Image (cartoon, rainbow, N blue to C red; front, side, top):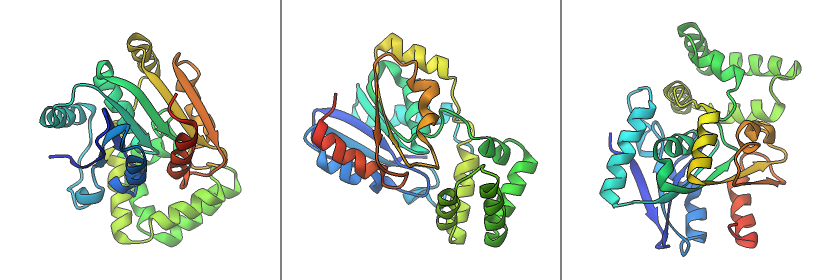
Length: 258
């Protein structure tokens, strides 16, 4: 499959941008426009998103992702670059870093998924029974809300997380998209000590941006990686999950890239 992407800007640095679940390339469009003199940004549609939304389901392996990017990098004649990922796009940013660490100078992670595995994600994707149950639950909104409210009452998930999930699963197409993405991305998991070693070996800079009020991917989710990367910055912003990308644009416009 050819990756679908959009190119914005003419800056001297190259940036590959990976959006969150239920979004498309436009997640980082404003970011790319604001920093168009710094970066030439390639904004990707992840599998099962954007122009790929009607894809047949498949498992996105690290090898498949690496081969797809090798093809892309060759086509665009890209030798070195930075990466940025928001939410589940963090998995793709980390998979890209793992595969091409020697080419990457800066990894920017915005409330990234993939550093610390959520037990609910493992339950929903880790077995045939779990996947069957997950598919049944998200396809039936009343059951989903009932389970979500029960998990909220015992403190496993927050009210805002249930509300966001209900919005994201509001149509059959969205339900299918979320299911395919959760299952399809399940093999994008990482050996965190290995990532730390790669960062140290190639002196890669990591920037973590997290929302103080983010209950979907709270700030502590980054700690297994952020605590041990030598060249890193962590920025805590006064926002929840959905507005984080815009808040990062505002912050970097004011403070600049360190």
